[in-house]
Image 1: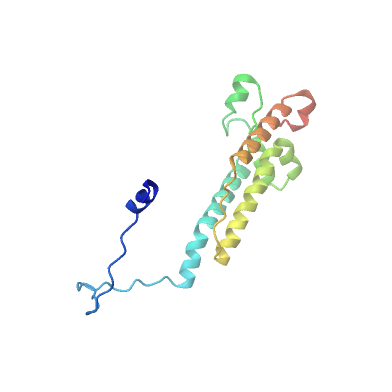
Image 2: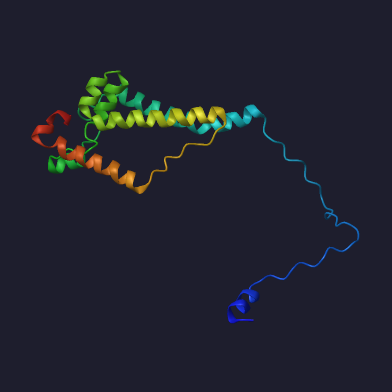
Length: 175
């Protein structure tokens, strides 16, 4: 045998011994466990719906709160720290005013306050709707597993949005 074949044989597992005739092995005796009852189909359906429904309820509650407490009146919400310290609008500036207008059904004012936030509201709503439909049908949970390149693209788009809205020609994007 060559050295190469010896190395391969050294790692080969031995063949198992042939089966012997005799009594079949029995399971150990002990306290019997009650059979695990599978949940009823309706119970499993409710369990699948719990997370998307609670997520949707939290989003509706957040929009209801912002819809009742007007961010256009001073004193209700904190001021953006970047805007206060530097005078520069961040990508999120105007997001609460956008959510307030969105909650009241004024999409033009919502886009005027923060177009990026409104786009995010629609993306989030689409994701939760897809999640809810798949939960009702018993399908897999959608996972927003984006490649790093896409996350960099989203961050780059937010950065471009922030820069353009602070320039004179992009003042239409400022709240």
